Length: 80
Image 1 (tube, rainbow, N blue to C red):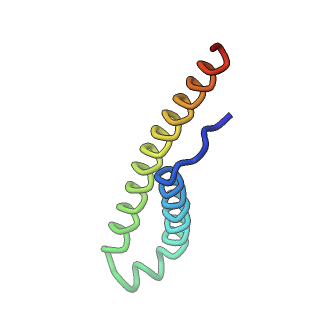
Image 2: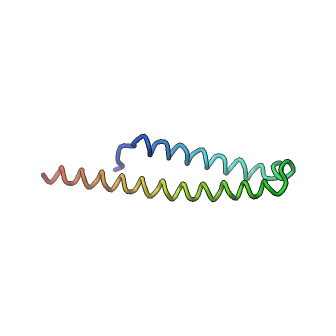
Image 3: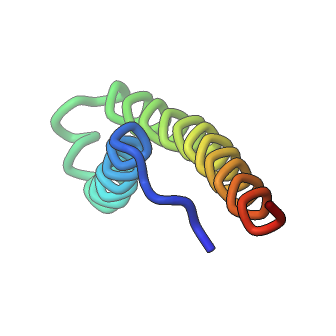
């Protein structure tokens, strides 16, 4: 069971979703981007992929901590 989503986690989840869509679009459009921007297109796409990976790891860590804390609190209430 998951913890209720806080505003911060909701924002992080939506940011994660936007980053994933941007990654998909940028990878699919790498040829036109390369023609338009040259070598900077590859660097930009790589930076976007790295940023997405880092944000995903941070979101997963915070979400897991929130879920664990919520489950611990729910377990404490059930025992009392």
